[in-house]
Image (cartoon, rainbow, N blue to C red; front, side, top):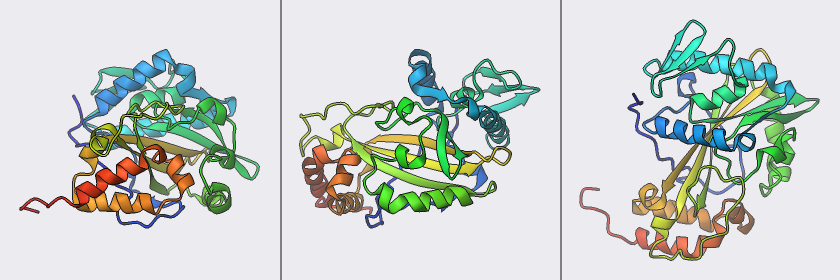
Length: 304
């Protein structure tokens, strides 16, 4: 059994001028997680990764124990309430009807945060207060966008984002203020995006850029990688849960209309060089823009 919801294709670059900002939007509780037609495939991929490269995809400090337990309980309750076609509880056991798996929530065989990663497509990061800073105390991370969990575990937010151009000077203070002020009953969402030449979700390090991409084949050889990121505070432990749903769509399926190509081209041209490098656009910027410009010039279909 699988969810009937069609997987969305997000275009977060459309209709917005370039700027380094948090871009937070309120989110209803029922929309916290994305369970769509790709759920079984995503869970199979995560399961294979966790079984073969577990220490790269999951780590947790001892201080994350209580927050991990709280997250698992919250996640199970959420799934049974808002996704009852796929999840059912029977006593202390949670049944995933999509995969046939059962999980003992009262005495899980794995770390509670690890179990959370097996239930849904999202990755989960736990951030907890340490003095006046929030640090990463644990994560189940099967779709890293070129960062290693082991290098970030125990680090504060500023160090976690040290590779983001302008973060320390522009975003560090607003982010710290947001984390300090976030209420337990508030759920927010934001998007992060980039263009990659490798569609694999698990990319802790960047592979060498491809040399065979041209203006003719860029649509087939490049992918739009979008992270739908949600944040919420756990009421009992006060930990902040950072959930990441990663969408990777071949560019010629994501950008199909001239106005979409125009928006992406405008976003890239307005983007500083260091941000193009961070978003993995720089190695292919010229050929990508040439491909987009060709799409902009196409005559739209008669029924548009």
